[in-house]
Structures are given as structure tokens and as C-alpha cells.
Image (cartoon, rainbow, N blue to C red; front, top):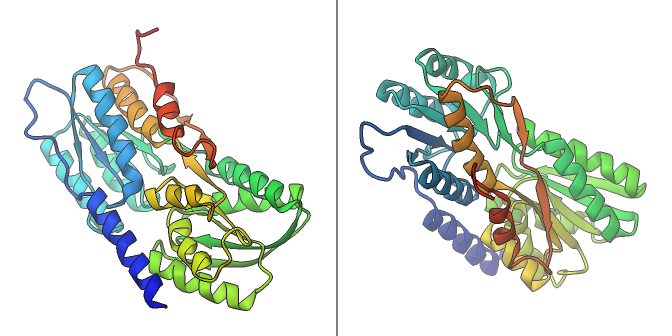
Length: 325
């Protein structure tokens, strides 16, 4: 890896750490107020707007909220966090599931203890979680594939980056993306699908290798968040920004900057703020004994240069608490 790219990786990693924390409660909640807890997969800036929405809805409905993130993306750590919340007898838990089967037992324990549990962002369909609030991943991948096919004019070599080949939500995105390309760009071909393990430095290494193996590569698409931040400096250093199209998932700050510079053409933004807001609303409904939907599709939108500085405000305006016109 070049010195320039090492600096870019370190800067990005530092940004990730600065934007997140693994334990972000809002002080000791009062005993007569509902306590709702967000449990993301781990420390990652992707979850910042999720919790912002969680907090915004909590203020509207007058409840206490906390944020409990594992230090590593490990199922055992997520299980331990939920076990601690069960011991504390919190009222509701919104969890972004690291694993389906691995969380079945602890979610059952929480439900049996009278705690309302929903999943957001990543489901645990085999569990007793009451609802999934988030992106329908295959549909979202299809949306990304249609947009890239349009930019490709129907042809060209494409490389796909994926932060874990065993992640079911990412596999669903890839399936949707692949389907869209086959339908909308029949002369395009996927020449590589690389596991980046969710790491920026791995993206850098994989992109350098892909570009060397396929000098006529037309596009790179990432189904996970680290793809654009890692690939953008590689393309810029090799003077291939714009020549090789770059797109992918999630609206991390470095991704948005790459779109502003023209290095990346678009990203698929999940409506993370809405996920947080609806999580509070549906947890409170469940606590009150009201039925809630098994799945709630929060949708996605495409962020391009034309809306990169306004899309977040537009997404926040989509949520309207009950009773407001």
C-alpha cells in the first residue's frame, strides 16, 4: 500500500472512532419513565443517524433512551449486552442483529422477561423479535444496479466489494444488484466479487489488485459501507477517478465527500434516521399492547452530486410524529 493511501486509511479510521462510542447512555434514567435501548452491531458511524432519530422520537414521546454498542462486531458481545439489559429490566430493545441464529436464545429470554424487542437495520427472522424496521436489502441492491446500469450505458466490466461474504443482508443486496445488471445492462459483466471484511485497509488492497488485474475495469460497486471510502483514494491516486465509476451503499462522511469531488457517482442511502424514530414509536406501541407490523420497509434513496447536501434534511422531514399535521 502506498504512503498516500496509508494516510487516507488512517484518517478515515480516526474519523470512524471520533464519530462513535461504544457506550452512549444519556445519564441515569428516572425510575418512572420508560427505558428504550438501541443496540447496534458495533462501533460504526453508520449508526449515528439511527441514534439521532431514536433520540428525536424519545424527546417527542417523553421516554429515556440509551445506546449500547459492542467494541467489536461479535455476536457474543451483542448477546452479553442484551443479557445485561434483561438483568436491568429495561422496557424495550431495538437491536441491529449481527446474526440470526446466534441471537435467537437471548431475544427469547428478553421477550419472556416482558421486554419488547424489535430489530432495525438487520433482521433476526428466526427470533421472537416483534418486528424488523429497515431496508429491504434485495430491493435496495436492485435499485443500485439499475442506476449503475444507466451510467454504464449497458456494458462494461464491474467489480463488486462486499464486507463479509457470509452476511445475509449483503448477500441479498448482491442478488438484487446482480439481477438488475442482468436485466438492464446485459452486456455488463461482474469480473470480481471481493470480501473486504468491513475494513477500509482491505478495500484499498483489493482495489489495487482488481485494477491491476482488470485495467479496462469500468465500475466498482460496494454493497457495504466501507467500499467507497476505501476505493476513492485508490482511484484518485491512479488518476482513474471518473474513468472508473464508483458507487455503493451508505452515506458515510468520506463517501459524501467522494461524491462532492466527483470520484464517486452515487451512493444508496438507507433511511437510518427514520429507522431510529420508528423504532421508538413501534417499541412504545408494543409495550402498550398494540399490534405492530412484522416488517416495515423504510426505503432508500440515491444520493448524487445534486442532492448530496440536502438529502438528510429531506429524510428527516419524512418522519412526522403521531398527532402532528
